[in-house]
Length: 204
Image 1 (cartoon, rainbow, N blue to C red):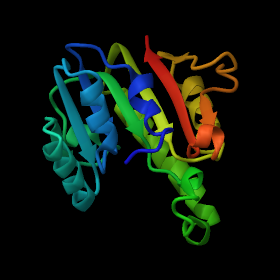
Image 2: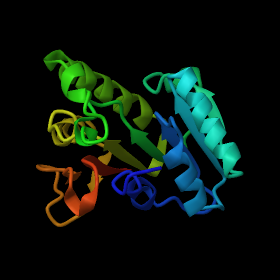
Image 3: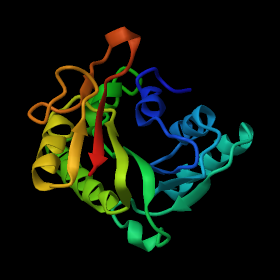
Image 4: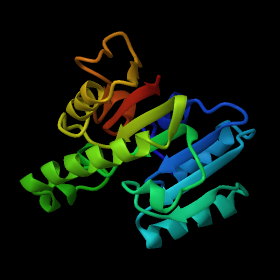
């Protein structure tokens, strides 16, 4: 069952008929399924995750509701190792994060997280974002998402990426969504949802 904040991913990515879509860091597969349900006329969906055990859940969920996607075990930071076939029209990057936006569902996060985790996660997010950008077609869309409320993983991450990536343009998700303060941050409890962050990027 997906929280309302997580359900925004398919709506914001807005896949169109005939497109190829990548769901990166896809396990357990709720967003993959939602993308396929929202746009049944896609050319194809690839769901990739580095956790082979959790990846089985993706296939189980797809089978349960009779949906088809290409499920791949792979590291999102090295897409050339598992996807040599070309580029995608749209990419959903639900990046590994601190999960600080979902503490109400997973209260143990408060005891498991350490200060250095945030720096390490931010560096991993940066590497994945750069790597997957190379797999996005010109004119394509990448939706960056985390279930975090920390600026280092969200607004600052996207601001740095925009500054370093000449062919990346921010697609505003609301009036205050600008390159200086990019993305949309949902805070825990807003509209009774979890904490979640989204930023939509267009490849020129």
